[in-house]
Image (cartoon, rainbow, N blue to C red; front, side, top):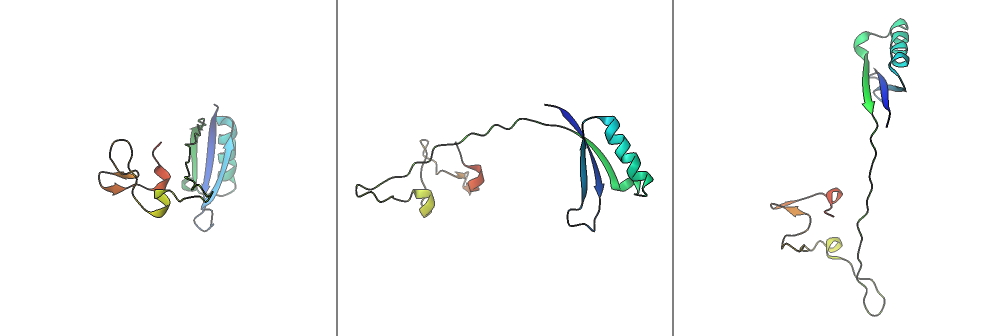
Length: 107
């Protein structure tokens, strides 16, 4: 993945809090920062960062729904608020007595 240069111009009065521009090389980023200074923006409002893009690996875990013989779907224990146990005797979604957010589901 390629390294990028980011020039951030802060603006506390803007709902976005500023503007970010991405550049492929340092020269383009520095030229943009120079143009901002020449346009009258104060130096403390201009920040320059480097970043390296990383790949994102997305995986999905299977979801199991139980179905009655009549074809109606049963709710799983997590939807009904009932604790379910994993193979180690612990309640899924709870670690050391603290309930974890659903964003951090165990695989």
